[in-house]
Amino acid sequence: AFAGKEDVKMSDCLFCKIVSGDVPSKKVYEDEYVYAFEDINPVAPVHILFIPKEHISGVSEITPANSEVISKIFEAIAKVTAEKGLDKNGFRVVSNCGADAGQTVFHLHFHVIGGTKLNWP
Image (cartoon, helix red, strand yellow):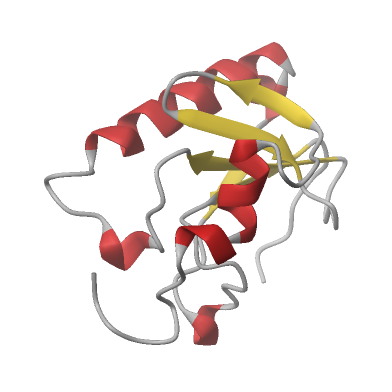
């Protein structure tokens, strides 16, 4: 892992605590690799966070050794968005990487936003 303020011990990571059940969440989906839950500050009618159960601090920490989980996350996104009917009109998938991009929890996560017409920033 790269040194820097983004490095967080898993025991201190909010999303690791959510995966372990130490911090409550509104679970939407779970499998062996992926956990998804409702965002506590939604920006649209549907706002779900998809995270790997394994701690990866962000997009810049994806490597050949851990990248398989990314396909698992996107498979889960496709399944959940179809179940919620978002695949009909569309949805957005966003991952902020680093403080300047607005990443506040340094555990890789993908925001899935939909249920309304979205504007581009």
